[in-house]
Length: 106
Image (tube, rainbow, N blue to C red):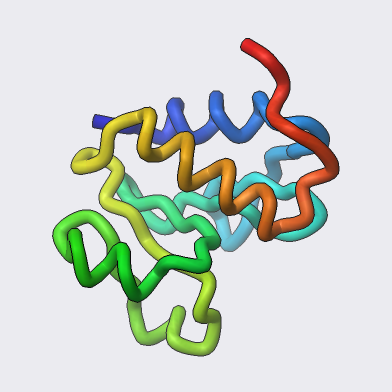
């Protein structure tokens, strides 16, 4: 089970990522938005696999009509995903958002 703190820790461990509010929620940016808290317990990431992930696990991955115009944005039920899988998704989101380098070593 992942939490907002896990999102924050993973994102801020990546080179050049900053945190600032977006629409009143915590958000993390590389060159562009890479992750955001959509609402309590739900995070937003960018992915090239949105359709496939939602088809395989619709109880974890989904989007709202607001996201229809942004085909790379996907919502995640944080309580239903493990931290390792969240980390993989955030790494992909970082790449898509123009991250300047690889994640910092732990």
